[in-house]
Amino acid sequence: MSSYNKNKLKEFFTDVQKKIAEENQQTLKQIFKTLCKKYVDYFPKRKIYIAEMLGKRISYLTGAGKELYVKAVKIPLTDNYLLFIESHQELPSSEIKNLEEFMLSIMEIK
Image (cartoon, rainbow, N blue to C red; front, side, top):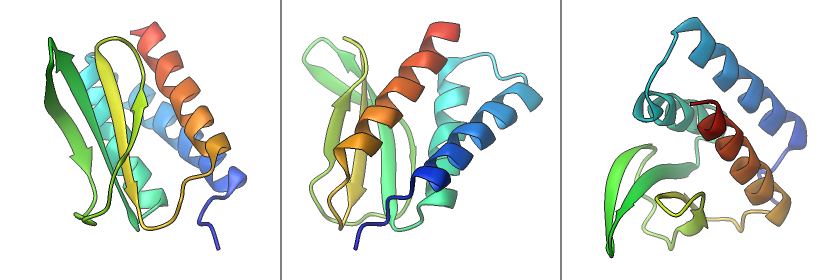
């Protein structure tokens, strides 16, 4: 059974937007940190992290969650940023798409 729940994901998006606005977060790294912490609050059996591409090198920026020792799903956000999620269960493509769109909308604002 998948841990995916559309309502839970929507609550997560709303909660992240509220937290970012409340704390008047200015940098992408601050926003990414908030997003990762909140994601693990909503989906505790997962690990999420964000990395920046520096040429051919992938540099870890921030993340949250316990190490699961499973292959991470890599979600390219832009030419410079990647989102990784580790889960013992397969992530639904709709969740991946929604996360990608949410992240891109936040990045456009900043």
